[in-house]
Amino acid sequence: MHVIATAGHVDHGKSTLLRALTGMEPDRWAEEHRRGMTIDLGYVWTSLPTGETVAFVDVPGHQRFISNTLAGLGPVPAVLLVVAADEGWCRQTGEHVAALQALGVCHGILVITRADLGDADLAAEEAREYLRGTTLDGIEPVAVSAVTGMGLDDLRAALSRLLSRLPAPRATPAARLWVDRVFTVRGAGTVLTGTLSSGRITTGDELLLAPSDRLVRVRKLESLKQSLHQVTAVSRVAVNVRGLSADEVHRGHALVSPSLWTAASTLDVRLLTPAEKMPTQAILHIGSAATTVHIRMFGADTARLSLSGPLPLHVGERALLRDPGEQRILAGLIILDTEPPSLRRHGGKTRAKQLADMSGGADPEGEVARRRVISRGQLVAMGVSLPDAPAPDHAVPAGDWLIHQDQWTEWLTKLNATVEQWAAAHPMTPGISRNAVTRSLGLPDQRLLDALLAEETGLVSDADGVHCQGVSAALPEPVATALGVLGARLAANPFAAPGADELISLGLTSRHLATAVKRGLLIHVGDGVYLPPDAPDLAMLRMSALQQPFTLSDARQALRTTRRVAIPLLEWLDRTGRTRRIDSDRRSVQTDVRPS
Image 1: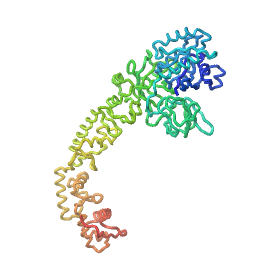
Image 2: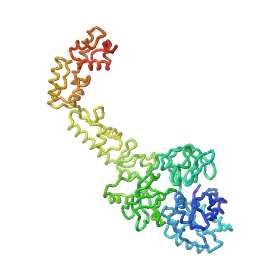
Image 3: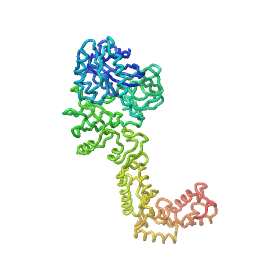
């Protein structure tokens, strides 16, 4: 299937032409029939002699319905530009051509209607002059009369030639259907119709409704009144979805493949033939969507657009800006960046220089170079890479991340410096925490630290943090001396744990004691209770000589210590399985446990 839109001045016979060409009625509303003009979008289709099917989006010609017109023109690749032979070129025809040029539509047919009522050759010559220099310059002219049937076969032949010249849709798994109509079918539920401009949709697919981020499942698919299991771009599609009511979706919403589109609220763009004076606010039209944007100009043709709501977009897409107050098209544009960096106070000039080198084409290597760190998922969602694409040159792959080689080298250098500086400043705890390293290096994902450590073999990450191999906690000389004094006293009376006053007098802090425990100089059996490392084995020997089971009082006397020490020591022995608690006051030594 191919999809083509109509364009042209009001009452130049667009709907009449489609009625004669397809045998179908494009005007859906009673008011359209009463007033004799198209107000909303209409959809009809026909088969050509070649066997190809072409669907038409019939757009309003009246200026008051320009938003509906742009919703119809936005997702299609080609146009039937209609000019009536008896009236010739009119203002709205020019405005439609300006919109088509802004959107980059360059394929079409110039259809001179009502050829039985006027000079078709003169109207065609006049139209070709107006089209000179536009994207539609040189399109094939065909004169027809919907009333007499003159030229309709010529138009069908021209359509076949046009379809053969249309570029094939880009191969991508990223489906996007711009919604232009919503209704409810009794017994089926909510149905969304629109033009599938990229990718494919299959029955059972789970799609994201943008911008609400609602996940919905495809129940049924129809295209041109035929039930299908799968549809591919570019197609007119009706999608019956589960889990969505009709009042939750509107024209301008889109059904998209999850994770394959950027929900963009800010865009950096290149403006094509911008107006001499750009306002600060305008309407952005893309697909069937229309949203208010704030415009910040960077240079003569680059700008940042801040959208009033997110849209599912890719780099390289075409869109247009319209001034709703003056009812004029301001400029067409190409999206250069769907995830632009935040700007500092005077960052506009720097950003303008960056944008000057960007074309809007798929450039994964350039994105890695500019951002220095980016995930594959971001590149795919931006539309500049495919999910299974290889890593660009000069990029270091690490999981889902791509890091520019210069950034990778900088991280490695800073990693070593950070670890060494920490160890020098904290000799008792030479390992710096993983979180601290991640923050210091500015890593977007802590898992990148593991990739860096895998390459930097001189560093390890363990329970003590990140540190150089072979480096352990070191005690300052005064601390080592104080611990020696304490150790000598405990050797004479191993269960006479020092009290807080004694520790203070020795100048030993909790950090000093923790380091001593790590180095095996002491053990910590309870709150504030430190003993020599052989204390548990000695305790087991003494308590094994007691009549089993024994009480706390028995143990305290055997150890010649106080309740302050005996209680936490016995609880520590319970936790390590050396003693077994029988009741609230009695324990027994586990006979199958030997002193270490």
